[in-house]
Length: 233
Image (cartoon, rainbow, N blue to C red):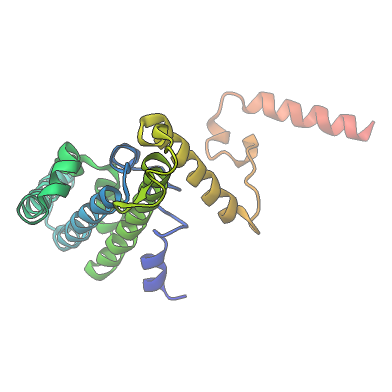
């Protein structure tokens, strides 16, 4: 797989911002009470992410390093305002449903994080691909969460009745506990399938990048020596 395709697809599963990197959990939980709300929030954030990545990649050599974060926020805020006005004008029902979480895209850690970690260091084309990949991954995560919560919590899917009126839905899925439950299940599922066929991570002190500077280094070395002597005995 080429570099461009890797950048484009890594945000779908391998580095999904919500289910793997665990970023943007606040809007993910708050706006995923229905499929439409989840997809709407995801698409709005994706538009901002793509546009801000492109602009920041274009201006990365102009923006002074000391004020880069405030500059990123200004760029992001400009695109958020455009998206907010477009939603208010053309999709007022979705705008009303998402409410405060649309302007809060300005401080979404996914968008600011990609600006700092990727767009600031890569070309315009790669930054655009990164924005598309991460945005689609964010949208898919919110859409799936919204579909599950809407199905079990309201008995509908995309507003169409599935079993509502015949079986009482489980309203807890529309509340915060249900959101955390669905989120946890999806994170566990992604971790399980991503871990298949890969080497398990070691959590020993030897794997820690700060091991040489750690005050517990001597204790760890002593533990290793004791284990070795025990094995020899």
